Image 1 (tube, rainbow, N blue to C red):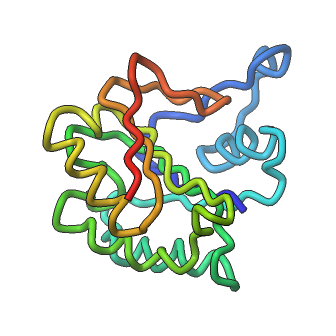
Image 2: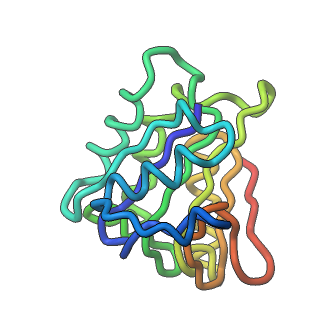
Length: 172
């Protein structure tokens, strides 16, 4: 199962591609994101968690873990939020001190040898510079899975593609 974690400070969901993007929907924030994610092929069972600005990451990591009843059920976690080098503007914020709480979700994630894909972080500049790379490495080590992030500015689209040049994929 895919789990999407979307910070409420992300401005709005991306518009669908093709003719669907021409239809104006009066969705609220959650409805708009649900529409985009559920229309993505193979995402009918995707779980979505929406994060308030003050939610501590320790509590959020428990919420992520509680979305599944069986271990190894989450084959990929996508995080959509604003970012900065070595920082996620997710809830109350995730910096180097909060990375240890990624261990709370490790048992819920599908291991790599069973085709688990780890975490994708869709946030601007998270992997920029030495500190950004080290931050992504710390997350990968905490969950013992690959983490993909970008050192560049990102704009969410309905295909969940990364923008800019090189991506950083860190294996544990």
